[in-house]
Length: 619
Ligand SMILES: *Cc1c(COP(=O)(O)O)cnc(C)c1O
Image 1 (tube, protein in one colour):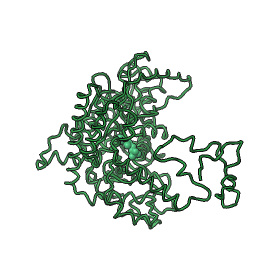
Image 2: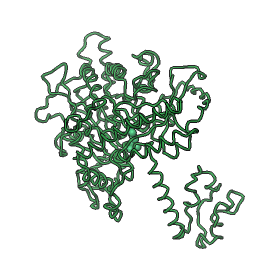
Image 3: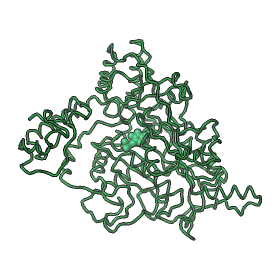
Image 4: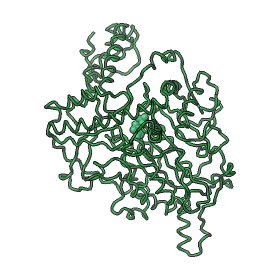
């Protein structure tokens, strides 16, 4: 049967009838809509996998058709896996199939809170809790989870990857900072905790303008602002939009008092600038600019706003690690000065608690999985590891002494961490972990009787297979093996960087080879489309001189990058390098069209966070 010859379109015989006449609709007319075009002619052609082969018919497919389609799909995926270099996804699925495929016989569903058993018994929460405990230990949290201890950790395994983890963090932070009720009331301090009241009230001040300012701060006290760098994953900006969480840029544009008061001078940036390279942040290391972050945060803290900051551990395109420790050291004195370390919140009429006025989230989609092992290698002389740069402290163990009141206990700085399971560890589908502390948990919107466990997670039904995958991975890899794995990947990334520099010299083309020290990714000039497809290279277009106003003078570069993962071998790198020596590997740079002018906004338009249409490396 040649489906592509079937006439489509309004003037032709309806699809359902054609199918019937071909004996494919089992002789009954179906109340279904007909396609207006042959779908196989309108979708992007995937040469190796023609759409025809996968179209589903009312009759289903024959056994042979189905088998052939699945075999071809398998063959395609296997071939692509062997050449995958561009994404931070471990391709190694060793052993999952043999050991775990039997679980495909079950519908496993971890609906509801992982620490309550709930009504749906075919779940793997026991496995999920073991995985969570494992990471709680690695991330220096207080464990096991104890719902009555505000300092203990809480978390769950995500059904999506870090996209969901980041969204949960933003949701949690937004509601926490804007004064919603918490799951445990932290008014009564746990042992050894001391709270200081840090609220500013209008009565405290005598002078009129001071009163006015105090009143403004009081109003801003429940209007949080979020900060993240321009190297942040696009999922973050999307989540910000979904949640209506105001970025500092949006807040600045919607508050006339702020609009012309950018403390960095000039127009407000959309996101916190990353460190600059020789030209701009485009050729910089991809880390957040701490000075600029601190200046921006101080502006909003001074105006009474609570603050959320998200930091990257393994940024999406450059693989960069924001210096979480240094950021916290810079920000804590600002938080102290503006009463954001402890403040009294009235979350219901007459009901008050004392909580933080800041939230630092670590987007560790890639890096939170390996950073603990790099830190172990640095601390243990038996690995003889000399780091290019020391891995920053980034987790729940990050505690800093208070500058103003040194006799107070140190402040634990990190409120939440997200990690993807399919990136560094490796899994056949997206999964991940979100982790926070009990003291930051919000009262869930409802505790449905239906599932029998508190509805603390984002999704209702949750993937119960993913915990088994991660558990199996962790059961098979000792700390020692994980340390060797990340050290080997770092060495291979250095090797790739050197090889690319050699290609650059040999062919006499500047390939702009760059690698931020300590990271697993090397970026370089984007090769021809065939090689990009062959090696699944992810690419990004970068504006080198973003300050330039004249469109003719804007200079762009097309970069590709390679992520060196545990599944990357020297042979794969050598094969890529060989391909890049080909005469046509780097076509003459095309002159890129002048971009369309940025549309002018209507006066009443609400400024929103920038959601990049493309790029940032994980498309
Ligand atoms: C990949 C990535 C995400 C999104 O994670 P998914 O697992 O793809 O949902 C978020 N942040 C960073 C830094 C990432 O690299």
